[in-house]
Structures are given as C-alpha cells and as structure tokens.
Image (cartoon, rainbow over all chains, first blue to last red; front, side, top):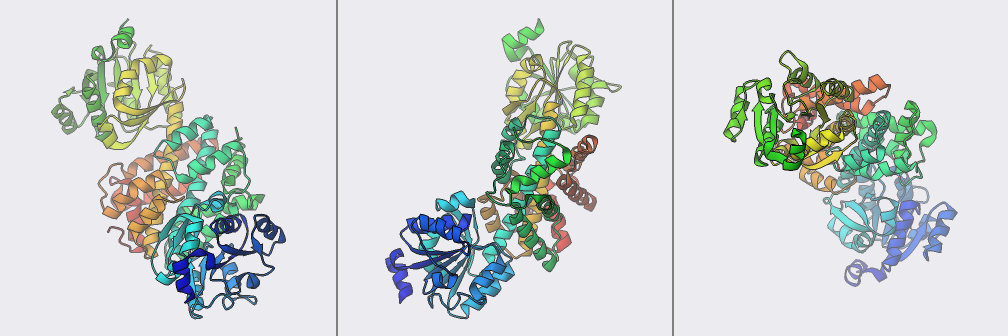
Length: 308
Length: 308
C-alpha cells in the first residue's frame, strides 16, 4: 500500500501540493522543500508562483494540476469559503488527489465548516486533517509554526512528515475534524481582544504622558502582560505597520467567534467590543495593515503620536 | 541628621509604621519585620491587629499612635479616599510622622490624587513616595512584590531599606509622584481586560465542548496567552473562588481608568466593556470573591460547568 510506503520509507516518495503561496503558504512550502519533499505549489497570483519557483519549487498553473495524484495537499488559503472552493468547486481537487491522500486544511474557520468538509471528503475515501496554524510568516518560513490538529489516526500518520517539516509544536487535539478549529477560535478570541487591549493601553499611556518605552518594559514584567502586548507594541513604538498579520484577519476571525456564539447562544461582549475596534480600523483604511493598527486608530481619534 | 543615619546605619534605627494589615499589608509588615525593622502595625480591625501581633509585630490602637515619630509610614489601605483620610483626616498622621519622614503610599489610585496628596504632605517638609504594588498576597508575605514607584531622590533614599525588604522588583519611574500611579493604571487596564477575556474564552471553550485542561495547555503555549489567563484559569478549573484578589478591586480600578479617560477625553471601550462585566459579577453577589469569578458569571448565564 502506498500509505504504508509513506509511513515506512517516509518522505521522499510523497508528492505534496501546497495550495496558496501567500506569506504563510510560501514559507510552509519552502519548509517542506528543505525537508526533502517533492513539492508542487499553486497560487492564482503569478507573482506568488514566481516567488516559490525562485526558491527552487515546482509550480503548477492550477490547483488541480498541482494536486493530481498528490499524497498530501496542504491548503493555506484564507478562509472556509476558499477551502471549500479548492476542494469542491468547479475546479475542485477532492477527486484528483491520491485516493488515500490527506488534505491538510490550515485556514482558520468555524468548527462546523471543518466538520462538513471533512465528512464530504472522507466520503471519497480520502482523509481530512483539521490543522489551523499559528506563528506568523517568519515561523512559517523556518518551519517552526505551532499547528493545532485534529483528525483520524490514519490522517495523522500520513501527514506526519509534513507536519514535522512545518512545525516546532504540534498539538494533537482529538480524532474529530472541527476540534482543532474550535481550539483555534478560542485562541483567536483571546488574541484579538489582547491586540485591541494592548492598543487601548499604550494609547492611554501616551495620553497620560508616560514614557512608552518604559511602559513596555514595566508591563512586560507585570501582571498586565500578554503575548500580544509583548509582540505587537514594538510595531506601534516603531511606527511600523507593515502587515505581519493584517487587521482584516481579525475582522474575519472575531466575526467567526461571534457567529459561533450567536449559533450556540453564548454571549461574548469583549470579543464583540474588540471586533468593532478592528472594523473601525479597517473602515479607516487600515484593513490590510498590521493588526497593531488598532493603536493608530486610538492615536488618530485622540490626537496622539505613539511612535518614538 | 537622622536621615543620614538612616542612609548610613540602615535599618535598625528606623521606626516603621504599617497602616492597613489586610492580606497585602500584613505580608508587607511581616517582610519588614523579617528584615529587622522596628515595625508598628495598625488596622481598624482588631482581628487583623492580632494577626500581626501573632507574627511578633507591635501593634497600635490608632494610626496616629503607630505613626508618631515614624521615619517611614507604609500605607496599605484600599484607595485614595482612605489614603487621604489616613494622612489628612481628623486623626490624620501627616504631622505626627518624623519631620523628614517618608510616606510610602501603596494604594492604587488616579495620578491626580497622588499628586495632590504629595504636594500637601511635602508642604510640611515630609516626603511622599508614590508606590503602588503588585503581586498579590503570597508575594507580599515573602517580600517579593513588584513595586512601581516615583518620587524625589530623597524619598527613594530614605525608603530604600523598606522597599528592598518588601519587593523583588522595584521600578523607579521618575521624580514626580503620580507617575507610578499612572503606570499602575495602565497595568490595571490590561489586567482587568485580560481577566474578563480569560473568563469569556474559557466559558466559550466550554460551550464548544472542549477539554478545558487541554485548552489551558494549548493557550498558555500560544499567541492567545496572557499573564492573567495563565494565573487565573486554574482558579476557574479548580472551582476555587477564594479571593486572592477580589472582583470589587477591578470594579474600583477600571472605574479609575475610565474616570481618567473621561477627564482627559480618551475613549477606552474595552476597559468599559470589562468594567461592566466586573460590575455584573459583583451585582450577582460575587464582589468579594476572586476576580476570576467573572467566569462564573458567564457559566451561570450560559448554563455551563467550568470546574473539572
């Protein structure tokens, strides 16, 4: 069985397709290449295909061509809609992958969407690994992402070399696709609220006339610290809003959190307040800038200069 | 000069009063005792005075008696109002302390209040050290608090042995009383929002049917982590709401943040949303319980069991 070959001989016999060569997908594809995989990349944007070709990767002119016969397909598209189109759209790849192939779905999405797509793919005999990632573009490029994953034993076994190549930390979160998606949404609720809180706090500190470098130093050593405060406030103090992760990602992700809450009758007033702040920031023209741009929104509203 | 004796001979010649022997003040007074100080404690509650006497401390029956001639007075009362009454009320201590004594004010308060009290005390020739603390009762007891402090060179020099005895980390934040208070309020904004966010997130995870121990493990290793998530969620999973720090502390402190914002025309929508959650939790009868009780509010509303 081909699947046993994968498990026993590992990596070099496995055909891997990477669909989506944006800042995350390009780095993940590069990590797979470095690990010795036979990788074919695809992105609708020819510039992104060229980026991957420049790294020595093979590229295809369609996702179907990239995925034909592939044992593993790593999907690094933006959301559930793009994932569904990739798998089951007019040019869907679900039935061109290897018959026992694994679809590794990395987009952040509502658990229900993941469950439904997994069921539909598994009905063809193929495997679905629910595998949202975190860590940003740099960690994608050096193969040190955190991957939250749920799926069957078989899906994990076949995907193992790719997961190893792309991640420093793999959390196995159960057998059912959708579980990992739900863990990711809990993380996104917190991450989004914390970015907005960091923005509110640093602007508040500026209004109070405090030395913002000292604020950073004190808060990161205090009970008010968060991973996001520590990571994002330097962008704000540098005035560098080039997008490592964009405002509109949190418009999407906090939107999913609140949709989930509405569907399950769960109130999430803090996530709701944070979502409104990301929407305001996007509405003010900063949707594609770094998510720490929420601080620029506060600064503009209150007439403050946060960059030092 | 007595003040030079303090600097040169240090500790054993210094009379120290501690006003307020609650969970924080008792531990701080004990840390001072352990360091060899001549400490007299006072609290209006006779049980708290007995607690300190049981640790070997001297107690006085009034704050005036405790503070008479004291070189250092450590004020560990609840808020600006109590601090003002302690210093300048009918039984105020401002003029009974040593003439060059230092008042070390540890309550969290608005910077303006600290500035006004400092000016009034300094007009008598005495010194005011704005010195809010953080770290909780355990770190108070073992002398490892974090102290944020601002004040004159003289105030710092004279207070040094006491600050050393009570803290593991001292942030010197400038010459002007009120600076340290402002840093503390930035921290409290973040801390309050993060406790409420941790509560919302863990209840959301429960609604999604996730294994909450696994959620704790995954989030504390992810970008959604905060100091408060890591510290408070174990209380929630243990169902242990004995107050290490009470809900009503954040009703007070986020109230100060929002008063400051209103006074300076600074909008703080996340702090506002978090404050409402603490008020709701207090209104539901949990004001004196641990601040992680916000999670119990979500659990009650949504019919969830968060303890494992």
